[in-house]
Length: 80
Image (cartoon, rainbow, N blue to C red; front, side):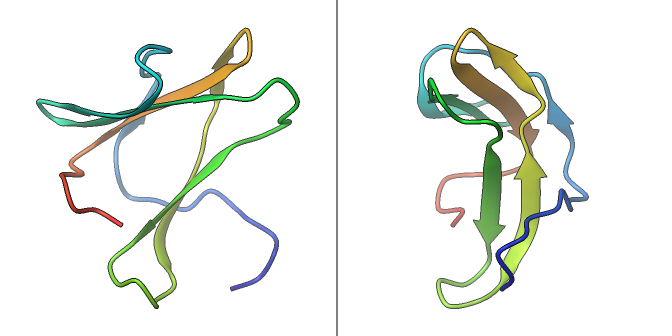
């Protein structure tokens, strides 16, 4: 994998919420909220296999104060 990340996904990604922080299961996917005071960007990489390439690269678009957040539809427990 290269060091340069670029948004690439077929999954539906929406705004999500800032709370609770971390990865939170919802009825239709997972909400992600990550605190960083200094980050200029946040990417979420999803994998189908522990030693494989990422199947999805999701760039967070939303940030409130220092919390980056997004909701990704269709992912379930066990997603890498």
